[in-house]
Amino acid sequence: MIEPQSKPIKEQKILVTGGAGFLGKRVIAQLVASGANPDLITVPRSQSDDLRSLAVCARVAQGQDLIIHLAAHVGGIGLNREKPAELFYDNLMMGVQLIHAAYQSQVQKFVCIGTICAYPNFTPVPFKELDIWNGYPEVTNAPYGVAKKALLVQLQSYRQQYGFNGIYLLPVNLYGPEDNFDPRSSHVIPALIRKVHEAQQNGDRTISVWGDGSPTREFVYSDDAARGIVMAALGYDDPEPVNIGTGLEISIKDLIHLICELMEYEGEIVWEADKPNGQPRRCLDVERAKQAFGFTAQVDFREGLQNTIAWYRQHAA
Image (tube, rainbow, N blue to C red; front, top):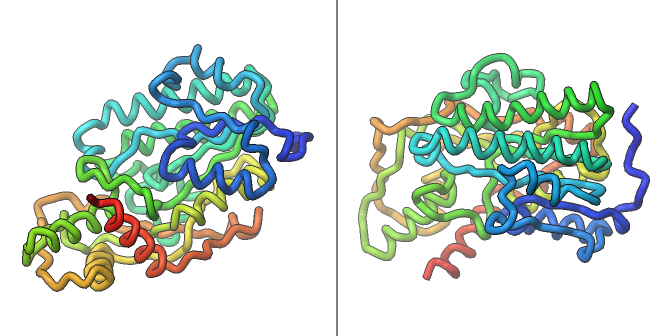
């Protein structure tokens, strides 16, 4: 039997890896809003704290009550095709060693953020958590997905053998203000927003988009994802993984048309059908999160896109 954390949240020392990033900033804000003491929250920085080193993991885990592991080497289809070995090695080594160090340091709870890329390529929609082992991930992001999925096995085995309280969450594709808009590594929403914005700035009447537009994706606003993560950190202690999402899907074709509408761009979409589509469909079953710790997404997709577009336009210069 795993004992729940004995300290109230305001007294817990909390380590948030990736806490300076897009999602991490929002997770820390949600922790503070939930009563955590900001002076007791530590954010390791990659320049001085390389989590691929076991010694570094041991040092940053020492004395912590709660660890939320958000840090990841991640990107869109382009980066996954260009650097599969780096994505596999970096994500596996960071996670495996940090979990082991947390166990050795007697950390009371470990929250591991997995990835939608861990699901098999042809998973029945909506994706149920039980489906995660029913096949191999989509090939373009398999090294990343397999590395992150291995951490679920580690947490479950450490729970079984050592009684270590680790939970595993599966957020769907994130988006929101302060996302990564670098075209070399960004995901689909920031990539498309930037592409439309630059077409408008340059007076271009066409934009090109990878694939044929048929795949579907589900997206969760960053503030919603952060709230779900913190709710799980405070209220979920079971070994089964949990999806964090909205349960709503949209095709890439409909997505780019919606972005063009919101940005008032009337140019033509040119589909690069020789480029990969990625996984055919992504849409989560979100019932377990609702039942287990009361999480449901709140931000409307159109509203979230408008917020993201407004932020990018303000900061694009």
